[in-house]
Length: 188
Image 1: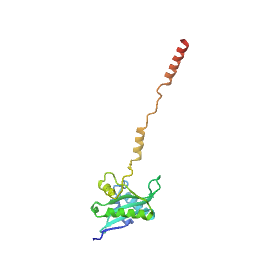
Image 2: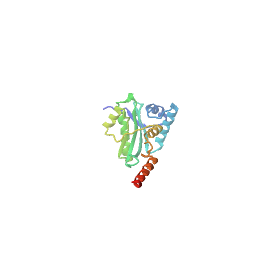
Image 3: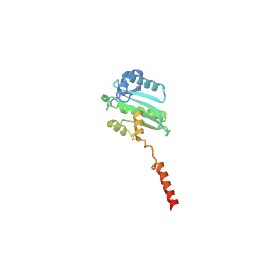
Image 4: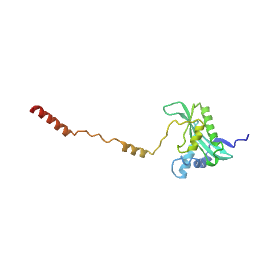
């Protein structure tokens, strides 16, 4: 039996450039220095907060993937403890070597250590391989997360606003009908 080449550890500030490259598609837009600053903040926050972990997987001594873990509730309404497994990602050249499985194993271990009864994650709907991988691990769909820029949603809401309701009859018309009815009643 061969020894696994995957080694897990907590992220450190020197991992920031590689983590930025790994998660380039999920970081906020901006220049490289902004993204590095954001990633450094994420790494430092995870190191300081006992309810968070940023786990890095090395394959044969090279950073191959990472995952962000956070202990929270399933939702603000469902208060069962859950570990959010955010962006479990593996560099393409290291896929199919057990790196993703090792990262998800770290998530389950963190859930067990913290007493969380559930593990929750999300993968972009267009990433077929990622969704199949998560399904094979027993993670089923629970909700659809939709996101849009605030001004876009505001514009769509304004466009769908019903028009101001106008009275079906103008007041002058109603008064004219009443006068005609009175005339008929007195003249007949």
